[in-house]
Length: 270
Image (cartoon, rainbow, N blue to C red; front, side, top):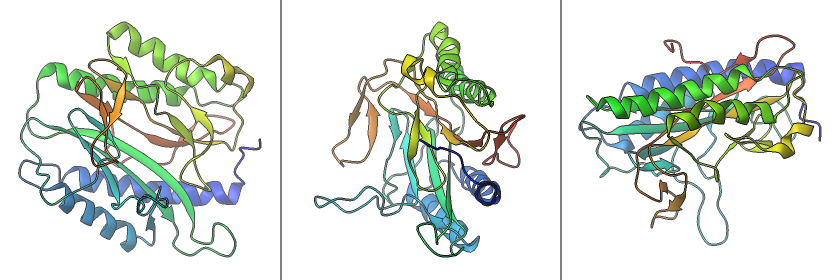
C-alpha cells in the first residue's frame, strides 16, 4: 500500500497539528479538582471550531446498534485507559490521573472530494490532578518517554517494527504492562488508517520500510499491572482488566528524510 502523503497534505497537517497541540495544552490546564469532564469536553469543541476545524471523534464509530461517539475528547481516569465519554457528573478529584485523547479535522473547508473538510491529526496526554504518589508519576514519566523513544525511530529507512521494538525494550525491564489490543496507526486522510503501529515488537512489520511522507500516530498505553483490557458497561470506555492505573501519550508524526516532524507538539511541552 502507498502510505505517502503529498507535500500539500503534509503542510495542512503541520498547521492543523500545531492548532491541535495548542488546544490540548489549554484543556489540560483545566484538569483540576472539582471540574467535570463535560466542561473540558465543551471547551475543547469550542476551541477546535473557533480555529476553523471539526472534532474528529464526535460521531465516530457508530453503527446500526448505537450512535457514534458522543464527545469531542476521549477521556479516561485512573484505571480507565481510553474512549471514555465526558459527563457532567464525572468530577475530577485530587490524586486522579486523567487522560485526554483528541483529534481534529482541519481546515473545515479546503476543497472538493473525500477530504473537502480537511485532514486529520491525533494527540493525547495524561496529567495529574493535584498531588499524586511518586510511583504514579513514574508510570506517567515512563509512558511519555516511551512515546519519545518511538518517535526517534520514525526515520526514513528504518523498519516499522523498529518503533514497537524500541518501546518494548524500554518499558519491559521497568516492570510495566504494555497494552497490546490497542495500537497506534496511520492518520491524515482519515482518523484511523493503515499501517498499524504497535507498542511492541511485531516481526511481520519488518517488511514495511519507513519512507518520507508517511504520517503515523504513535500512542503508547502503559499500565502498572497487566496489559489486558475490558470494555465498561457504557460500551465505550476501555479499562484495564485488573483495574491497575494506566497512562496514554500520543503524537502525530511526519517522517522526513531527516528528523521526524512532530506536528502535535504542545507549545510548553518539554
